[in-house]
Amino acid sequence: MQKNLLIIGFFFIFCPPLSAQVPQDSPFSPSEFKKNPEGWSDLLGKGLNGWKRVPIPPGGKLLEKNPWKPGKESMLCEAAGFHEMLLWEHELADGTLHVEWKFRKQAEKKPYTSGLYVRNSSDGSSWHQVQIGDQNIGYLFGETLVNGSKKRFRTESLGRQRGYPPGEWNTTEIHCAGKSITLWHNGYVTSEWKDCPLAKGYFGLEAEGSPIEFRNVKWKEKK
Image 1 (cartoon, helix red, strand yellow):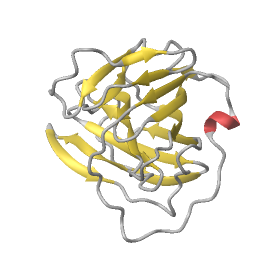
Image 2 (image 1 turned 135 degrees about the vertical axis):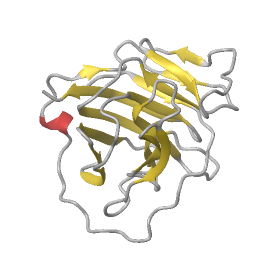
Image 3 (image 1 turned 60 degrees about the horizontal axis):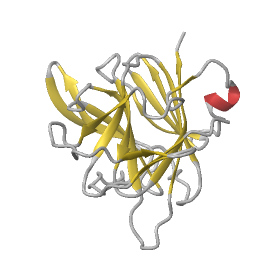
Image 4 (image 1 turned 180 degrees about the vertical axis):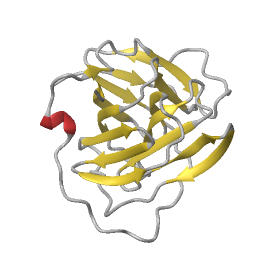
């Protein structure tokens, strides 16, 4: 098991409410990483080498002092008052992203929320966010490019909420195949987007709201 961790401190922003309708749960299935752990690229194997910071909203100003500090087995973001995404330096097309994450439990009651990104533009102006959290979890939303113009979208959540409580590790996989992006959380498919207009883009981790740890950030290209 890879021990690399990434710990991020965040600010909360509004996320769209969940759909009132809850369709039937999908069948349980193990993660692709667990079924076949061979042939994956480790995106956190060299810490933050290969990642770049992008402000949210795009075009905003980042803190002049980079807050990321290397630790023995983790990296901690201690600065407050910012909101950003970390984007992997290479575009990814068809394949599977595997990410394990957990929130650090806070003394005060607060919403635990963050996100992963898939097929973003390099500057983050076109973005597709996988919503993660302890409750509000398991769908895609964002601003995508359709015929050169931005279009807001959100996918339907399938079944019950699949987020574990703060302090417990969650597993998310994002399966990309052509125009189809399928989300899998903790054993279940939770949403599908069958009309992604972008064939490739940049994967990212979001800094928002509450301290969160990431480990085993893996990518396997579809052959």
